Image (tube, rainbow, N blue to C red; front, side, top):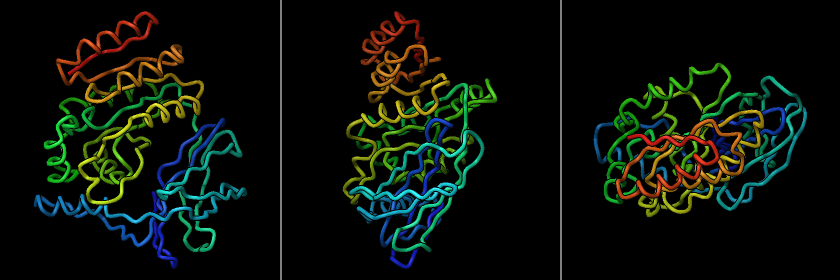
Length: 304
């Protein structure tokens, strides 16, 4: 990811692109009046809270015209009402690394660059983040907000043993990809990337939820509809048509239902499903889903 302040006062933030010989995606945000600085890591609760709240004091650049160049091809696109842009295109070659560049149409020096690696994985691991790898207390508003505001990415805790499990999955095949698909919003992108790097999770691509604007949105972090997870996992599945999927989530929100829907659409594309069982009162629902999937020869494993 790269970002840069430009003469227009806007910044382009480019996330990790991904793609195959079939389809590729370049995406990011354009912000205005934004000062992207390295996060100040502190053990002071008030300083951590301020650093976190600054992530929601963003000003997006809506409906900005962009030029996105891929090799010799230039695409013209616009940001949406929340400053987000997404380019879906047919790659100019079938393998290798492609250099991509995005700039504001009226400000060529705003250009930021990234690298897109075209891949053909045999397996894709798709993981949720909150309460799957990162202890977040998503179902308790007070605990969730307190944890979010009081701790930096170094002090946030992963579940015990989860890194070893993920690296075990990662070592099964030399030809696989990790995607982290979360209902956390794009405001937390840098925080999540730093958390995964600091706690030694496998390198991957991140697909998050719509950005939230305003300090009042902090308490709504990770909330709202989880429909975007289904849409993004379908996008991953269709981008890599030869790969099987391993899906990992938790019972705190709607992961089990979303994964069931994905699995029943294409049972032959699913390797396994893992759901962290967080609540006893939801076990009956999980067991029902587990049985329905078993009827289609799909394994859903419950774990603590």
